[in-house]
Image 1 (cartoon, one colour):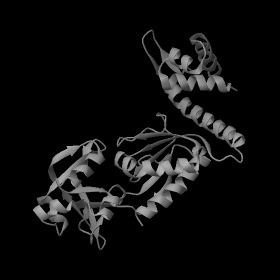
Image 2 (cartoon, one colour):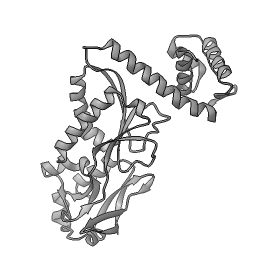
Image 3 (tube, helix red, strand yellow):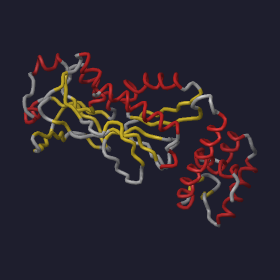
Image 4 (cartoon, rainbow, N blue to C red):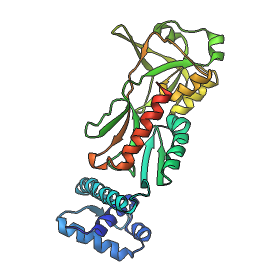
Length: 299
């Protein structure tokens, strides 16, 4: 069986993209790191890293093995922390990815409360509308809207019945009128953002078991969902967002929900993990915490 140190060295080299950088972060010599990597490759009978004088990259075998190594190291860390922290509360590192708008405007203050409940926990937060790769990036869990595209991921539901909502500021509606049907949206200025690299300009609604799709148009397009929400607050047009993103603005009257007799596109909200072994106590407690907070915000 490979030593834990060899596995840690391999994972760090893969993260840093450099043997010497990995050695510095681990407090060992580059020669020792190189020997550990060679020892691991010899034992496995596979080349894990393709190396040249100028570059270093994972081989296909290395990519597959790295997933198992991360799971093993995470399981060991959880076991050690459980023993060390008996009776002392939750501890360890939780690496979390979340969408930008929800992350900045709802999740950040919530995480302050979660950290207050578990003062020995270390949080690492990544906010980005581009989905983190849970098998490659340094992320334990990810918060995502919509049905998971990868069936191999473990999805812990937070708001299973969550939907999108179209809304606008009172100022915009006073100037341009209030749409009464989905077809009216085509005559308004839509505030667009990229979803999966493409403009999200086909808005879907349903009522009485019948659905409709409306192609919308507008002069504003961005790659960040929070920017689209801010444009709506500034009165530039209509925005079609996850209700969680705009719930606080709707409560405060800054945005007005429209077409309330129509249901917006389903967009369930989940906490995703790459493997069931990574549903640690930290993840379970965070999931329960978010179920309560999101339920309070969007009852």
